[in-house]
Length: 458
Image (cartoon, rainbow, N blue to C red):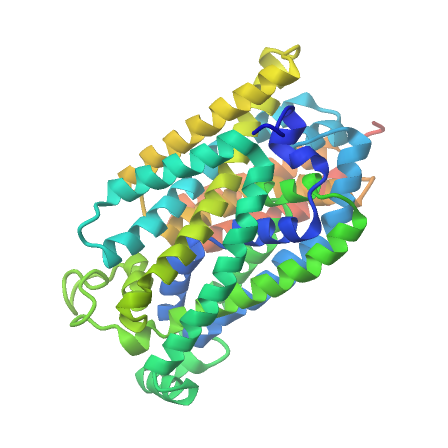
């Protein structure tokens, strides 16, 4: 806190953060309890081994691709344009202040449900591991602790803690996969058991088919090209050399975490059934399954009770790092983009920093309230959140970085049509990953086409 004097210090760590801290901060913001609890369980149960493809492509596209193709461009652009948020870039790039306003509102609306999903994932694990601890106790305790370290030190304290969290996650998943293989009698035995249940569960494409698998891969791998909480890492990184080092470190981290998480998820078929998993099958074999409870019960089943704390710390680390990143970005959309951009353009740097601290607390409170309501399954929440944000920002941001020919008409068209497609499909019965995938493809396709149809000289 003593070193956090200005808005740049609080929001970007002074723009001088090293490669290892940035790599761990990116990876831990990418993978949270949403992945470990919601996605790994539901996808592993439904898709079997083919769910591991999601972890592979997350690492190769969502991490290696983003760092390699966009990392230095984003940092260079932030210096040349003098911007510190994604919304500010869109304003400068397309010469339209209204885009900054609308994009800040989009961040505000669609990232808060994602924050709530992080709370829900962690709380599911605590409910399974410590039946005496109530759901709301976990939500409030986690929100309070995250608020304290984030409000005190901002981005720099977040990246320092994320580095520790990343090390914890790395060690924990190695321990986790060891216990899973040991409990299941080895890889051969696990494979045979899953194959006996359904041979398609061990095939390259699981029972739901290629399109549901593709939509999950596309949503979670391509959305990071325009997710504000991940893009911020490149505004804050030190230099081009740091990006190169961080790229390899974060890719290895993502491969390890993602692939192990989805592999462990596939073993839910081996270890869990209505007789030994009352939270996952609350109404027995004939009732509806709770996919968000699969991983918590699996972890309790395969990990010795004496080592349960390791798994709890793993999920806690993954959750709090993501939550802090989301809260910081949501606060900046309200304070920097909306308040300082439209209500009080003459606000002092000190005042802006104080408002960022207050905004961070506000967004934690809102996320806690939504989490206590328990709106939907984790996969559904993340699908809507990532799909909406990705479909709104992908077209304008990616094309704005790589092409001088796209213009504000194309950018607006891609945002509106992309987001509109996602929401219409979702509310007409499509799954959130499928709706988000189609909306993101529309967003990417529309910007260059519409810019060509209506060229501008600006």
